[in-house]
Image 1 (cartoon, one colour):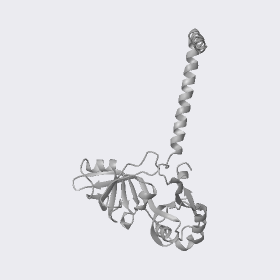
Image 2 (cartoon, helix red, strand yellow):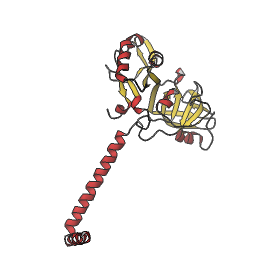
Image 3 (cartoon, one colour):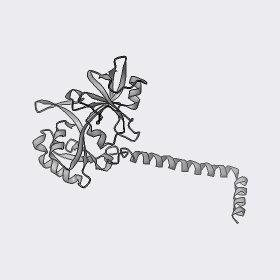
Image 4 (cartoon, one colour):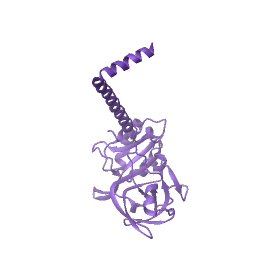
Length: 258
């Protein structure tokens, strides 16, 4: 019975070749477009979800001014005053910044600088390929290269322990990390330790003082609701920061799409 129906279908297709071709082409095109749209939507929804901690990672936002560039000094406050925060890191990204990078033998332009601290690598589960110490940043003068940046700058030579001058900043390469995933909204080629105040990339002026600004990310304790922490921070933030009146905690998964 099945074979008979198949023969009839083939006979009809051959009898009406033009309409059959139009129908097959239309179905194939529609199916392909749906597949492409589905893959695109999936890739967009997967951004920043490469870390198993993504649902516990939040960015601090100035709720009144809708911006995330906050006083760098909040980093110490978050670490010391709120025990429900497992880890916190400042993160300043300058993707469009072209830096003159010098080694003992050559110089090159590299785009994409990041300043942060060692907790960044644990919060975002960064793949550290090689390191000269237990932590990626061996000390405050350390720099870290992605694998592709290390190849561009040093070729086949081992970059670990080598001196590297990034613009005016003298550093020593202490680790190599994997390139950031394609589905990451965080990207860069050279990472600098922001515990060194000379490596901080942003500054601002307010209330008659100059201070560094950065984005702050936190990894929240698994058993704690972020709305409770948000409330707790807003009850005390005024005593720590003159510029911010109200803080909001934005989930990492919301940043790219929202």
